[in-house]
Each structure stands twice: as C-alpha cells, then as structure tokens.
Length: 150
Image (cartoon, rainbow, N blue to C red; front, side, top):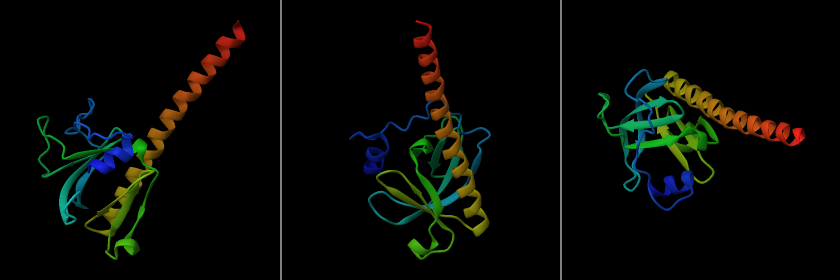
C-alpha cells in the first residue's frame, strides 16, 4: 500500500487515511463488495467499498458508521483509467484502476456489478478532473482579466 500512496501523492509516507471531511457513511455514490489484493501478501480479500466525493474508501465490513476507520482511500482525481481486466487477471468480473505509477485490480461479484463500478468510478474521475480544470481556467481567466485592467 505504501508504494501506491507514494505513486498517488508523490511522497514517501503513507497518509493517515483521514476522510478529509467526506461523510463516507452516508449516501454514497456507490457502495458494495469487491475483491482486492492485499498490499504485501497478494491474496484476494473481500472488502466493502464506498465511492463518495471523488474518493474510493474500503472497509473490512459493510457496517460503515461515522466511527468506522477506512482500511484505505484512493483519491480518484489521481487515477488515469478504469477498465475491464478479465483477460489481464484471467478472472471473470475483474477491472483495473490505474494511476501514473501503479495499477490496482478488483474483482466484482457479477458482470453487471463490474460495469456499474467501472461507470461510477469513470464518472467520478471525469467529474473531479473537470473540477480541477474548471478551477484552473477560472483562476487563469481572473488573472488575465486583472492584468488587462492594469
């Protein structure tokens, strides 16, 4: 996991898994069981995933409350692609989520679930990439307008 966080955040330390004010326990954009590989022991483990406000959280069980501590968080704004990976893993219902430096693999319970996760995460990547771009454009336009007034 540490290598994944270094890839995402460009740092050598693992984040404290804070939710950054996201109420992950309430009204997620998507939630459900997925299999994911462990960081050090590469066995497949069933985890409860929650997608909300541009972050993909995972937990050991599905009873998520305000006092739950995520086992991990992926900021989707750092992700480049999400796509099917049945052929890569040679397993049904597999998909991958890629950052510039690492690819994580997941396995859903059905093809329908896999497609729903891919669509939900893909939408979140686009929305959160666009919000950053829109903010940069607004900042650029404001700076341009200010410099033209001088």
